Image (cartoon, rainbow over all chains, first blue to last red; front, side):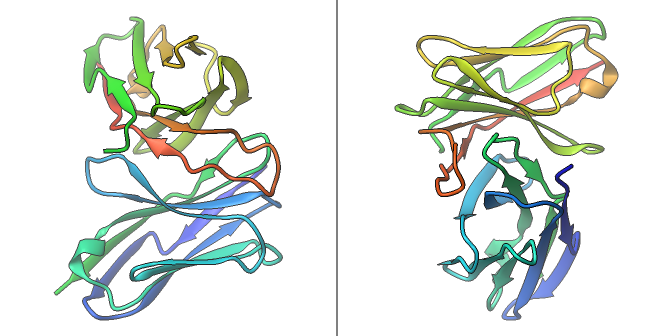
Length: 110
Length: 118
């Protein structure tokens, strides 16, 4: 069964610092997604990663995928308060059964 | 605003009842997905439709059913409701459906329907 584990589940960081969120999954998967969710809001798609070694960047966020290690990372550079949210990774296979991690609640403090 | 609309925003009902949640996908999107988000279960994929046909099933209970209509809007029907069905139900849409590892379609999520079963 496909399982997705994220860590840490809670992350408190200071503005200007760098940090990485990790997403491990248990079986081979076709696609890896990163989403952001603000409190009381819906999910916003950040990245979709397809192939081994894929790296995508948007502003202060960079996501990478290592399919051999079954690991994706979401790296935060020089965090700002606006990045405070819950970040989810999710994986699916061709049957489109998407499995989500538990989410990482990020708080960026001044 | 993702372009995906869901109604109603909030729904409060009693155990044993039946409710219908509605989703209108973004213009041009053929795929509709339903998800459930609760504190104890997290985010779970329920079911996907593509151009009117069921494409994938996740952790959807037998008491739940869905359909996608010719105009591509979708409805999620929840029956014999239990307290544990209280959750946020999201609909998402995408232009296509990923049938191979080389293709991925970004999913756009609606604002959700918060269901409270009392």
